[in-house]
Length: 129
Image 1 (cartoon, rainbow, N blue to C red):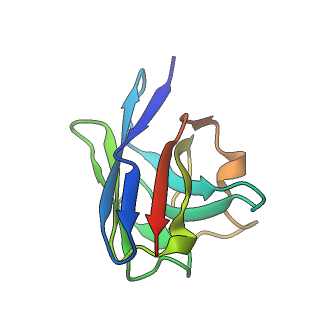
Image 2: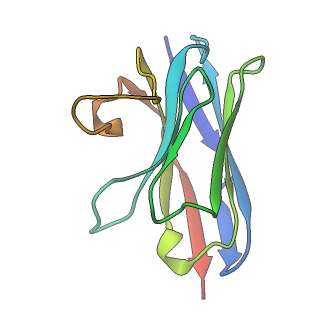
């Protein structure tokens, strides 16, 4: 049974940094597409960052240059390094996993974590001004 467990959330002031971790169990993250998405009350889900098995990454415009997604394939952990945090980054952050997706030269409908098979319970990030 696949389980994704997020950690590392917390409360920080604007301009601060956090590193989120997502540990997968029951299934390796090798050759998977891993992603982080966020959601806050009254707002739509926002896909924040993707990384595939080749290490290709994709970011939402709202976090480009501030967030970095990475993975440790030996430990089956995906990270989200978040710098220069803003109050609008406040949300519950979730990790998601899907098989059979590569990001380079991808064609077809827009990629969405809503279509991913697995996601975790989330970790809260709160940024105060």
